[in-house]
Image 1 (cartoon, rainbow, N blue to C red):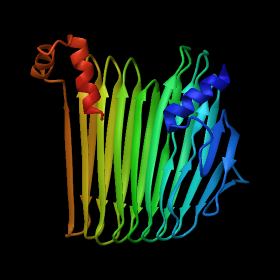
Image 2 (tube, rainbow, N blue to C red):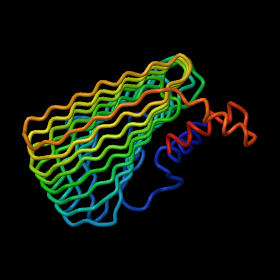
Image 3 (spheres, helix red, strand yellow):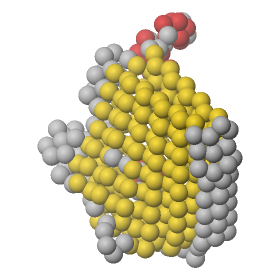
Image 4 (tube, rainbow, N blue to C red):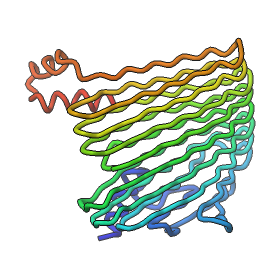
Length: 306
């Protein structure tokens, strides 16, 4: 049964239905479950703590790395440190993600600390999906931390998604961008029941012509709570944009705490925040097409989070 759950979670968090081509590291219940390096991407286990170093050679193109973490047992408390060293002019895709299945009474938890060291003019697309499954009373807890050191001209785009079953999460992203570097984050979150989700961004644009774009779209249902905190510091000639767009339903609570600081006269910073319920006319319009109120609501939510 655990093997079946493992396979289902792998497919959901990283779209892996069999052993992937290219470089990969699969983590199962705090232990190594499979690893492969390639000529251009080397994955090495750390010797001083739990985790791996992913070393990507300069000029590597059209390759991917899969590093999913899976938990299938109650009572697991996993902590892993993964460091990515991306060589100059490389252009790669990294697929991460964590799935927790908990049918027991004890909490299960995964904490992943990912650090990115981006070489000059490198490009990274990082895809991370978090899900929780199982009917146990124990919570499913995922707390990812991301630290980015973006060298001159580098670009990183993070696509993070959490739409299912995670009881508690605190998601922290910190970045320093040098001249011409860009950091882009696209976040989607859905909470329900008594779940709690907190997102924290702290971005420093230290070099001229650096930029950051943070976009968070979320839906909070039932009695769930969400908190969005973004801190953007423009320390040079730069462009920064932060956007929090949330739908609130039932008795949920959503808090947005933006902070933008221009430490340079040529820093251009914008923050946008919108929190509100689904407009009644949207539901009525869909109901005239034959949908029930619940179906109309689901359609609006799904479209919002696409």
